[in-house]
Figure 1 (cartoon, rainbow, N blue to C red):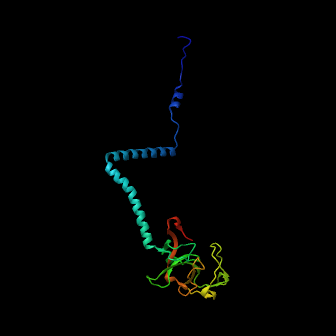
Figure 2: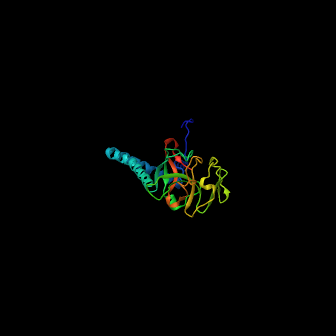
Figure 3: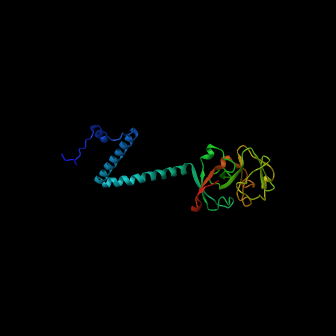
Length: 231
């Protein structure tokens, strides 16, 4: 044997070690099995679509149509049984609401809970379906006393903090220039346009009976550029 030839001797144990795959954790095994399962399902689905193109198309269409129909039905049911739409007919709630605004009124909330101070409510002056619908903001609650003096509202003798809303000073207190005591089922309401609103200060509106409240105004659906919740 020539001197430039070399014999490489490999230890069998070393060769066996090289052939061994690195150990895989149980978590990684599960991931691999899941990936293989999903790939197999995709392959089967692709074969099924290829074999049944028309049925595949119908299935794709239904996967879009059914959820859309469900959403429409839910929206209709919610608006039919828990809401109604009203349109603002006057400027007494400017600048919060404008003439022509279309609003959603939550009819369910007043049945579950009493209107709160500063809620905007829709109501009728009489407990009649055909009576005109008015939209105003709740200022005083059942059992409270309310008075308007020096351009401000006083509840139970204390000045009401309305700074968050920026209302104008009230020029005329109307009936509320004298202290008004509300019954246990009455609310005192004002329009946000304090000097251009017919509300509880005047006899044609007066105090609002709870039974005449339709619901709370919570969302504007029109005009498009002003869509959103109302506070």
